[in-house]
Image (cartoon, rainbow, N blue to C red):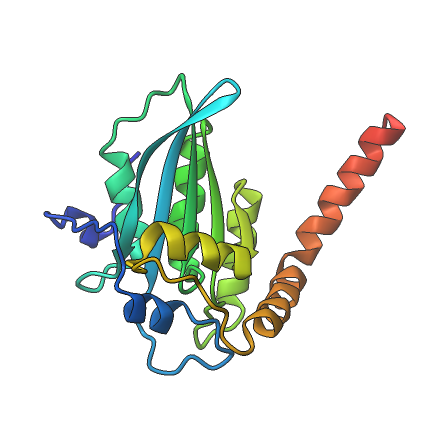
Length: 211
């Protein structure tokens, strides 16, 4: 599969494994109004599924680079792996912002090109550009392509803290409003994806009825 964005010709992609604590907390805090947080960070875990077990292949994090969005950078990174079409892979993302419309479109196309790959996206905040209709449509497009999309909750932050952050054995502590903001954002995401969930519910009902 080829992605035609000019940024994909960049060389020397910098993937890192461990966050500094302040950098992680600043960028992943699920504030309702996250002013000044212009960069998107993406933590990833790549696993290969072997029957009932899974094997972890890689983990780390990326951020936007030279005007190229981090989601597209990851596609460039994983495309170079030459994935075995006879094996199943599961990729998990934890992102500071949800994808913009263009990135969602690229990721959806990538998933359709690699049916042996599944993607779960847990995002700290929902991103909306000036055209507030574009990003919701992008998320729906991703969902239709098979991506699982959810808002990060305490357990996701706890996992990231212990996997991607130089925590110096300090326990993750929730900030004030983490749970409330996660619930608010989850409801917002649910409203965006609701038409698709309703279609899925109807399909399940028809299958149950044998129609």
